[in-house]
Length: 226
Image (cartoon, rainbow, N blue to C red; front, side, top):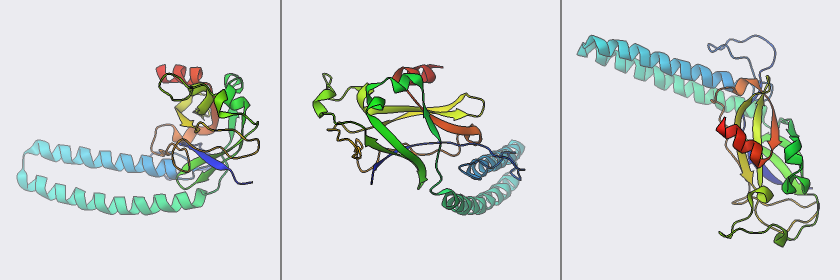
C-alpha cells in the first residue's frame, strides 16, 4: 500500500571502526561519512580564517593580497571536492531504515493513538515517516480553535533525535493536514506532497545519533526550554 511520507529532518549515529577525518568523527551507522565531511569542512574554513586574520594583523598589503588569493583558490577547490563527496555519500545511504520509538506521553495523545507509522527511511536528503490512519475518524473530531486552525495535539507529530548517551541532539515537529481519517489510508501533509524538516548533517551531535523518539507537545516544550 502506498503511503504519504511525513518527512522529518534528522542527524545520526557513530559506528565502529577508525576514522581518517580531521575532526576525529567516525562514520555514522545511518549517514555514513556525512557528519565527518561537514565537520572537516567547517574546521578547514576556520583554519583559513585564522590564517587570514594573522596576515591582516601585519598590515602588509602585498602579503594580505597574496594570502587572500591563495586562500580563496584553496577554498574554491575544497568546496568543489566537498560537494562531490557529500553528494556521493547521500547516494550511498539512500533507503536506509531509521529506528524510531514513542515516549509514554506521546502514546497517550489523540493523534498517535489514531495513526500508524509504518516505516522511516532516508529518501533524498530527508527522513520520511510513512504514515497511515489507524481508525476512521471524521474531520469534525479535530475541533478547530478561534483562528480556524486545528488543535496542535491532533495534527502535529513532535520528535527528538536521541544521542547514544540518551541526551537530545535536536527537536522538531511535522504537521498532518486536517482531514477525514480512513483506516489504512495514507494521511496527507499540511502543504505539498510531503511534510518535512530538512536534515542538517553539519549540526553538532549528528555522529552520535541512535534513533528518533516521538514525543508529546509538552515534552517538546520542555526540551526547547532546557
